[in-house]
Length: 267
Image (cartoon, rainbow, N blue to C red):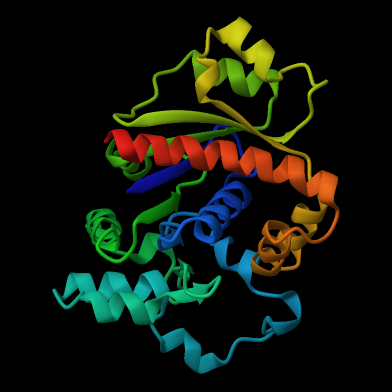
């Protein structure tokens, strides 16, 4: 099942929302999930799962020549060698091997890849469904040929909003390519903000069953910044920390997760 996260504007929390939802599903469902970003993306996914004190401030020169993550899989697929073993060794396990992420790869810049890279990545993402039940793909906020193709191939698309008026008006005045279920997610949600769930339903005639919210959670934001999403989500789902704040945060994640599972059941 492919779940594509897309942001209606830059900086609306697309990657952090994806990692939170994917972690919640991994911890509460006996199924495997994978998080990934295409080569054209920001490449910031792995920083959420890499504690800052373990990050290398100076990469070894030899790593420039090493293929890893998405770079490695593109090369394998290009030479018709991609198999389950290659996929498994390219991914980093999390949450007791219930969730994995695919490193972005740092050897090549996206512009240096041949034209067929987009098709290679599409095939890789389809092959990932053989390895895990849930494949989460963060395509950022771009609208290019590759992003549109992923939106059209997704079983569920989660559109992330920051809640700004211009962002919402631009989105609802333009066409959005998607064949699967569409969910709308307001992150850093506060019930007293102008563009809250109730007003979105009224102004844009939206289906209330497709609008989700993740309440403001500075502790989760700090965990993302410090690369401790895995540790935070484990503690949060096990009832540790600020109970009232975590309870609201988990309720928002549960809403998104339940709608994703419902879409999968109806597929």
